[in-house]
Image (tube, rainbow, N blue to C red; front, side, top):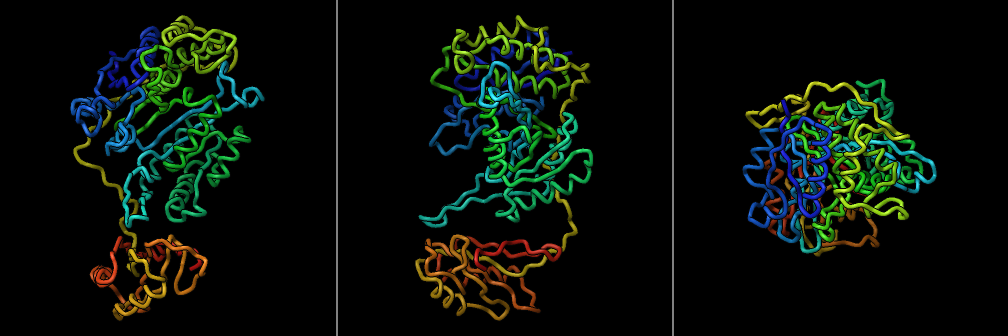
Length: 485
């Protein structure tokens, strides 16, 4: 009995490379059946703000797996990326991208005899990709960076399980917790909490800028790395550059109920319809999908054929030995098909007996809500009020102090995160948005209503842009100090 999956051909070169990959699957007798769904730029243009039809959404949620070509989100129309939207709506929390040196794909490292074989696991649905941004003044834009403990735990646990499954002995956590102490700090803290459950895997952490330097100088140091969303996005594209570019970078978006396998390169509209696109990235993503579904023997057969084909010097026009004439998309697929059953001289993949095909995903009856510790003791200790003003810091302080009620005192004013009152430097340049920090006096209790009254009183003199409560959780402060505080 064949396994049915949803397939979206994509935009630009998508239909061409998808046709090539599915033809290879058919030649390898992969037991898949396809329901083609309507997604992409043409559906944005037709008025579907999500970039997909209602039937496409229903089909993907029913089947639990989407195999998709590259898709374009129209620019300048106020619509969200269909790729990001799909990952977030269906909670595909782990993005796995495997990078390895391929024979026939020359890079600086392959020429130096340095093999690359590493996996990046990127948190896929949180961080700045929430797309929550506001213009607080004409000169000040703010974006919310959302990192959660449950979301961090999901992707980190997946990374450890993936490392164990692949036989890796090392997993590193890339982060910027030295600067983003609460957001990246939570991610790093969760990493080490979960690491205790995997004593067989060596756990370490590395600041993301240092990680980037080491990846381009000594990539052989790493086996697997887990990162937050934005940092993982940047680092995974950096790693694609190490192995020849996005044309050789497979991508899997894994969720508990729905998963998406895709090529992450662009739609290449300049060559669309010419039949010369390179299908390798989509084929590698498809091979990952076959393993995920349990078709490990077929995955190994196709991967060995691809590696053998590349080893023989067969290439499309975007890579390879220029002394050997390039082939078009169809001819490349034909070469892979003709080489089914052959293995490369180096880097052959060992096939395993097929596992039981993955069962249909669960269909929840309501949205899942996860809270890691409902018994955490919370204490409200103050408020940050963000206001628009062209005044000097001492002028703001005088106005704020006149409005204070007995339970609070003004402890700090900052501008762009740097303290400018009660102490600061005359050389600190200002913009027209300030943060005023009010904390409760020792021995007093405060309420949300009192806190909001402070903002309401300040609104008589300033435009209040934003309000953030200052909290302690189990006695630990849940906010950061300003630079210079």
